[in-house]
Length: 186
Image 1 (cartoon, rainbow, N blue to C red):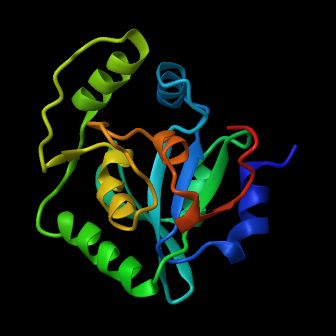
Image 2 (cartoon, rainbow, N blue to C red; image 1 turned 90 degrees about the vertical axis):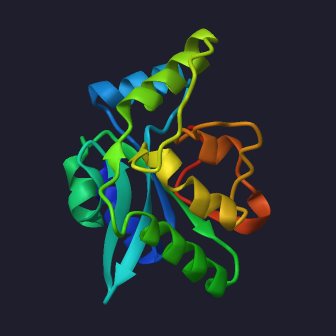
Image 3 (cartoon, one colour; image 1 turned 45 degrees about the vertical axis):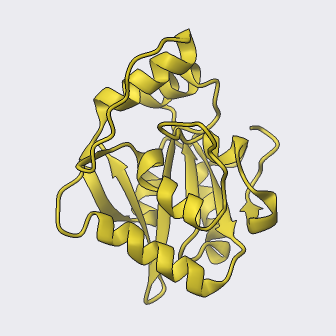
């Protein structure tokens, strides 16, 4: 079986600026997300390419920030997985939505929204009706990138209050994306 690191080396040349990257983690929180949402993926971020180096911008327990993509991949357990969603839209649209996404956290620190993330997971798993209060200074990974993906028409989230990582597969718009990696497990 191919490790996440081997897969990254193999697909690295196909990953570019503006791509979404979904991760399947193997840790405790990842397994809770996967169990509650009946999902394969537990994390998502946006790829930024600068001078040939790839970075991931996402919301995680340390807030919204950029990390070297290779370092992030190496931080995952070897049995973890990832998938790339490439926007197949005009580059000008990608640049516009990327600017909007990055400006969102430019002048403030966005904290990880554990509370709303947990509420949404419980609502989905146990069919509860916990009230979700959206706040600009708090985000979970999938909600942080949702305006970017929605603005490019990569997804259609309809009545979802908070998007979760697997929603990017469930509600994908196949005419505007290309999947890089193996989708058959999902």
